[in-house]
Amino acid sequence: MQRRKFLKNSTAATAGLISAPLLAAQNNISPALSTNEITPIKPIVICTWDFFNASSKAWDVLKDGGSSLDAVTEGVMVEENDVDNQTVGVGGRPDRDGNVTLDSCIMDKDGNCGAVLAMQNIANPILVARKVMEETPHVMLAGKGAEQFAYEMGFKKTNLLTEKSKQEWMEWKKTSQYKPIINIENHDTIGMLAIDANGDISGACTTSGMGYKMAGRVGDSPIIGAGLFVDNEVGGATATGVGEEVVRTVGSFLIVELMRQGKSPQEACKEGVERIMAKNKGRDDFQIGFIAINKAGETGGYCIHPGFTYRSYSEEGHVNTPVNSFYKKD
Image (cartoon, rainbow, N blue to C red; front, side, top):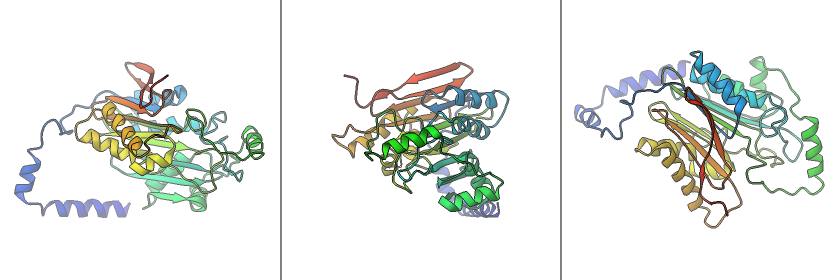
């Protein structure tokens, strides 16, 4: 895009004005904090929760030499297309007015990103988010604007409300009580991070959000820096759970920055959760889970309540890993 070329050229011109002393100082960065010297490892993909099929699809792309961007795209699409997964894509639980609205974002190795928010009638929001990234000068499109853009890009109108989700919504309306259930109602939001054979990192996150939410509600999942963040020199992070709390700490960006400062993915995820709990002292009625990967291919995760897991796939195997939690089992 012309906008990105302009930004790239402007950045190069500005760099030429930096003084020699400053450049010399930058060259003296401590090896412990420098990420440029890390040798990229072999391909790996990780995702929130035990999404066996999604991680398998992403790994198929990686093992055949595909890019991390294609891997995360095709991986999360598996869940978007699964009508039995009621918190992602087709079959997702509707808002309290009976409308299924989808949120998604994607970020590549160069820091390019795209997102759609509160979009209706389109089955694969991750593909639309990628089109926003690749075909427009924007980062986010929302609501009717996102839907109209999808039609212009050739996407077909799809009824996202399955009979099962419709019947559950009608039953919910009898009482209209809203209580997110830890590790149940919101646990299938999928965030995925991958490193390809070139050592490049990409990420994707997609959800239909909290079931029976207020119309127009958007959580962390499509917000770059909250639900997902990638810095190809450092690593990436993604989140699941009650998105409002992740947004308040810009959780995924925070975790990547902690890794930049030298923390491991595990240490960074733990501190990310602790930051949230410091703002919610005494609360135990919600769940947040973070996962992260660094440039060396090391992974980690942490959550508020026991029960959160993440799945990884590499040449070393296909593993579902339970993570440590802020609150321990009784």
